[in-house]
Length: 264
Image (cartoon, rainbow, N blue to C red; front, side, top):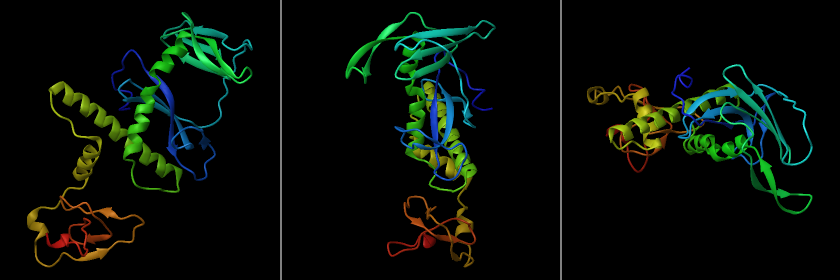
């Protein structure tokens, strides 16, 4: 609902996004060429800034059949006249390409340089306007995917539902950072970087105990937590990771030869 309520610009792009997952799943997809080729496929609608406006999770095979010619470069279009008008275009490249657009149709067509396996050379192929505009704006979703890949949640659950929830948490945080960055530019302020923004949200979710509680008596005991991955030390300025948690404050603090954050 938060994505659907965001304002939309004139040019938007729909592309595929992968939720990395290699476990068992009936709708798991493999798309070669992606940074994470195996996982759950999501169709994402994004603005030129990378802001996600809508998404649909792929839930099974859905075939869209349109009849037409067999010569490369041929195209045809079917238009729904009832508002909002939508044009469905079929263009024959190496394989048939089917696209829907609410802004563009076939005309005016241009030509693009494509590789011909049959002739072993580049050939000029006619291209509909909607395809050309899509190729120009396809980077919108790729920008989102690139930002998501920087600082994903460091967890590798074997259940698809947990992996999908973590993915959409990352997506929501990235969307929030894009809106925050836009607001800072409007106000003339310097925005935080994406990593600093995520760390700031993490501190807000789990606030630090006050100084009086931290240094109260001898009730602060160390407890070794049975976890697969170590957690980052919660003391400001410390970048170490640890499995030791304070039983009173319920925060992770590191104890090593380099230093003891319990005493600081």
